[in-house]
Length: 404
Ligand code: PHB
Image 1: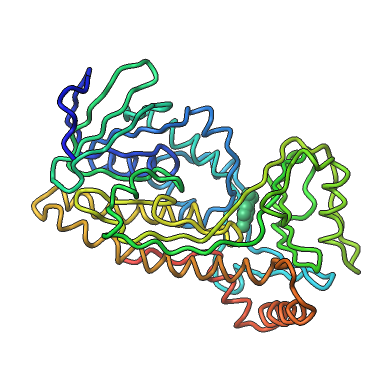
Image 2: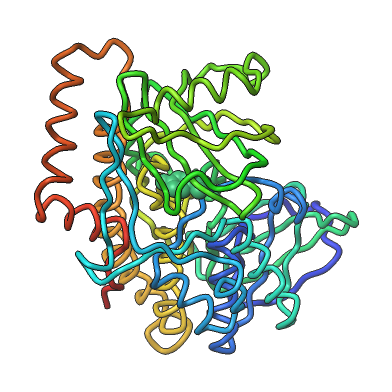
């Protein structure tokens, strides 16, 4: 679609890469490309403060944590993050530790996505990257040509045009870029779930040294962490649940019942300082390349949060893109972009399976029968009581090496 000739544009820049989205995927891509001397412009509809204030998942694979340090984003994760060598599955009133280190020599880092974002945004400032937060009226044209453009109005009211070689849609689960691929050219795969997560932040000390994923006949609960004084917890709820209907007492009662057991485990309670309902679904759109545009992260795929895969997958996408894009800008031309999807997608579908598997194994579907519940306990038993089962979970959760 050619831009309307009458439309006002105040400034025009030529930059190889235009990135819609300045969350972790978009910023990490700009950071990685910047290290190869490739300039990018990132835009985001949200302000920097809005992104910082959005609570998302908290688990990074050890490889992704190492990449933040080794690529020079920041080494703050080594001070403020916490390395976990395992996780706990709780069911039938008992905890069962899955020891990542012993089983697969791996670990994960508890480091909230908000902190990953803060580090990346600071690194862009430090390295002179161009990032426009809080833009309005974004528009992308010409992705079927080799001169795509991105237009937007920056927070100060200036209308910009970026003339790029490649446009990257890293614009999240409500991506505008993915709808630029015509319906006839794209396929969307998705699965909805009949439940959501009620997420809280509580001012309380830790209840357990590592994360606890709990299955009970009353539903799922996840006991995560943020700092020594603030904890993150979730419990399965109805997608239409209203947070206002939940007092602190009712929240704690619900969580305590879901983790209770003969071993006497209970949560350390404290004031609830934030509550939100998180709806989720499994989603993939293919293809991930269309002409001079590629999609990365949540724009192309989302997973339920149960396996802590979302951020890790997004960071893997941009790691592959940071290898492919320099080739596409060089003598190979845009055809090099064809290498992206096969390398990104195999991990996407493996992660889709893992996230789906963890979700169905740990949640209680509305209307589940006594058979369904006992079958789930059988499945959980198979996982924790065989080395093969524990190893499978550990390998999937701690992440696979990047394929080249
Ligand atoms: C979190 O800490 O927010 C978190 C951790 C693990 C998950 C999902 C969310 O699987």
